[in-house]
Image 1 (cartoon, rainbow over the protein chains, first blue to last red):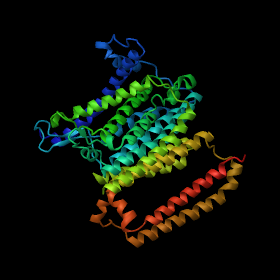
Image 2 (image 1 turned 60 degrees about the vertical axis):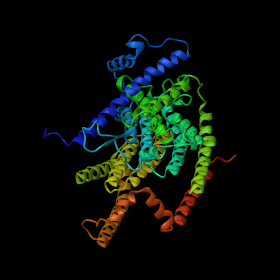
Image 3 (image 1 turned 180 degrees about the vertical axis):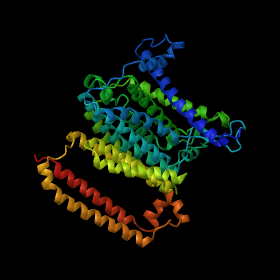
Length: 344
Length: 173
């Protein structure tokens, strides 16, 4: 076995492989969940032909998409049109690299040194997530511009204006948690939430930062372009928004990016506000189950909201973002700063 | 390993920067500039400064370039065609002279700066590696060395510039 790289390297590569596939699978699962939940909300049955209760439907969809013709408008910018979906998907996946989802493990004694269940634990993790989300905007802007179509351009412009506006509130909500935790590493932020108050309320930042959590979730929904903030794809006005001209697998990449982004926003919310993998009853090596449960609940909330609330109007969205959400985030930040100073 | 990464990022930064100037399509220039900023961020990581690297991406590659992109998109700038020979003939000598003077100035500055610190590897300051910690940057900036006033003054300056731009751009009623 001398030709193999050292065990920690193999374990790490394995971890990256597993996380990548988990993200792809979670996107597939979300597509199925979305269709099922939406069907029940609308008193329909939803997909139920492919596999048990239609769980294999997303895979059937992917196979169908693969065999579709790849179309490109004649006047499109060839290079940027091809790159845009790749930027979107890559940014969506990259953000997950710094999210921790469990304690350290030795894989039942296979490894001498335990490895953490996280791809990399950089000491500026929260900022890395922020940086990568801001890169995701380019995929959408470029898709809108390079298609050379008015619907795509308007969709791309709206979407990027929306993301830039809500990024501010999103960042300020994150800053308040960073102040409380005194660290930018997601692993340390989760560890700071260990323990309980009076023996039964977990020390999650949700209870210290209820307003921050609300701001984070609203901004997160707007960031991922989901209903009720899904203007980029307001079909009555813009057909399908920035990806109107995309077909086949390049469309699938945008679709994948949207769902992976939802998973990432939920996973980061879980780490920042809901105590990450921390939870009672389960032994340490199963702690990631709590993480999955919390992320799933947030994702379900996303879907539930989409099929319950009507879409905002675009000017209302901008007004809400700048005149209400941003000031609220600033006040929350100042209040948190005062609290931290007072506690010292 | 780090040396290889350094050369990859350095090469990427230089090549993309050169291509920025060489593009006919302004949109492609903007994208190449973003790639160049990304390569610079990679160099910062190699210098043990992850905080600087991430702020480079958030502020330059993220915020500022998105504004560039918007301007290019909204003005719908056409491809830049080479100037017709008649205009090019007149414009070239003056432009060339200015460019030559500026490049000479830059080269002289570089030589002067390098001669002051000396060529060769920079000494590794053990304290420098820990500067990567955000806490340290914060306390150096605001507490120890007392840059707080300069920092706040700069932010007020930027705010004034911003308000000025809004006032100038606003239509009179």
